[in-house]
Length: 515
Image (cartoon, rainbow, N blue to C red; front, side, top):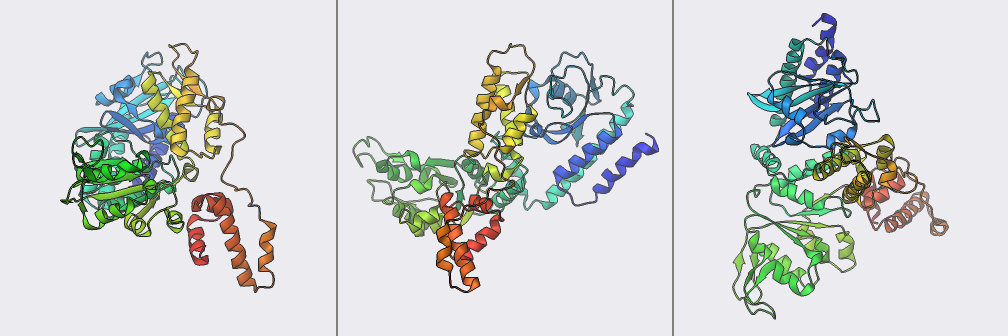
């Protein structure tokens, strides 16, 4: 390598001594590699179980970061991973390219280009791969294999230092072990790199190791159950069961039996004894989904079980001591439910020792593209397609849509669009493109960057006449906030968004004004 070629590496080496997030460090590494080598795209993927997970990409579409590449489904990646030397694929290689249609530089099918990959190892064990792609089929002709091996060693050093830094920042070894167990067990992860998701991950990790009751709130479809499973997986109870109960799906006369169990003959139809969810969750976690739907008649018995740790089966005089951590979830505003007499205040405070608000998809900005990539890859594997991608108009449509149904709506939308794209296509087609028309989001995109002005009721001005300026201003604020909160079913995040103020500042203002 010449002296001029060495200059970009100085930045990477200098970064090793800086406090940087792992994603930023890996992104800087790829940007440097693209400066040094004639490539149009680079990617760093980590091997987790049987999948390669993109940690950073440069020159590939953003949704690539949401995709999981199953090694057995991608022979090129498998060949790279199994080789201790750099692997270059001929332009006419029959092996499908996992990045077809994902390069920023092209919108159509890409059949001829230069592609190579390098397996990365830590402590003699495969860690992942570094891949390079170029539009020019002869781009890599003049690259010295020794130079590639040097880059491999440099990449491994960056990865090693990044992992050591992460370990030092990790609060406990137990947390690391539980995180690895979660991935190994194949549980769905929380996907997203937005500030809102970073805050959510931080809160999950903070509360998971305690035994505090957690109340998860958020709109329908944001992934409250996924958050609950994550809290359990990172907790000291991870090896014990997580028992799920959907409180909204049970008839009122069966809720008590589901929670606490019953003896034979306790009621009509009880032909045999049954253990309740509390006893099944002994030593582990009980997740009460849609807890706001619990009948008022059952709530005092649930409260007693939480306070004493004792449960009594229907029809039995004996008590059973249980050790259970409670995680509850609701898309209702339980504080409002308490105020209106539909939920017990003491139970609300018992459940909500540590509240976690799951952000809506509207608050997560470009996370929608990562999630879309994740769902596209799931559909590609399920249907057996060669490739799936979003065109530019589809990406813009996804970013502009307000997502009232959140992540669940996105998942279903992608599945429908894939089926539409597949309909009538030749089965040998190597790449299917999802267009904005196939997404069928309807109407012009709605952006959240510039909220529409809030209409003010003219009658709001009359009550403040004759008051001192400070009191008049506060009274006007109270009326305006109440109007906006009512329009959004008391959802403070959406109200703050409409008013164009920071969510935290809005919450403090609501509290100060006593709204």
